[in-house]
Amino acid sequence: FLYGKFILNDRLKILKNIAILISGTGSNMEAIINDTLSNDHPGVVKFVLSNRSDALGLLKAKKLGIKTFVFPVNRTNSLENFEKKLLKLLIKEKIDLLCLAGFMKVLSKKFLINFRGNVLNIHPSILPSLKGLNTHKRILEKKSITHGATVHKVIPELDSGKILGQTTIKISKGDTHDKLAKKLIKKERYLYIKVIRNIMTGKNKIIQID
Ligand code: GRF
Image 1 (tube, rainbow, N blue to C red):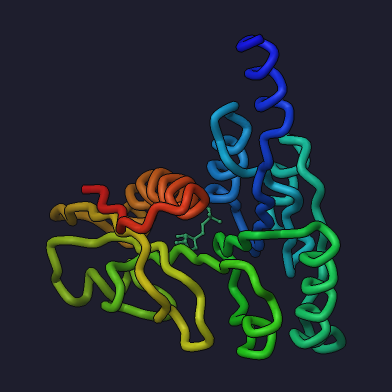
Image 2: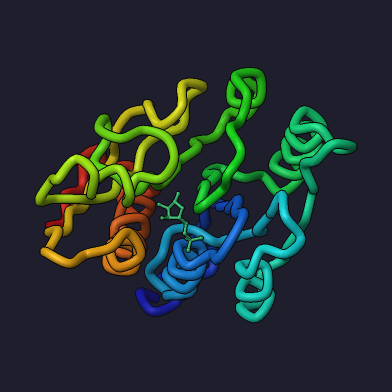
């Protein structure tokens, strides 16, 4: 009887649905997908969407068997249109959690209000310090000895939502912005997958990875 119950529970296990937005390499995206493939993960990645057809991450997602979409944003295709199509897809696929992973567009307030699920982003700085672009370069200019990344909830103000997790790296003499980016991306992936598991299992603690 117990064995039977176990099987039943296992079959009925309800997974939460994740979608990922990318614009480029997709290494955070790849880590998220790989993590969801393990049996104990509470979520499943339903699709990856890019605003750029040349995003390398699209190929990686396809290789991992994930559905991909491209909705371009350019002179003839507005961000408003992108968001309309995205919202339809999110509703159709019953998405609970939308993860931005190197997605280089700023989602509008209207979109964020209309989508009822959680939206997360990963930003390569220890927020609230260094919002915006070129953070590796800017941290070197500041002559800081520490750099890092933050996973936060997305709100209309750029890089400003509730902080859910942070990771840090030490800056060594001779580090260039490229070197920093390479060092940090490894820890970013680890941070992002931890935060996602944390939020999906309803835990509220802030993740700190040093
Ligand atoms: C990461 O540094 C992330 O923090 C920032 O964009 C970069 C994306 O890298 N938002 P990847 O596409 O996940 O490799």
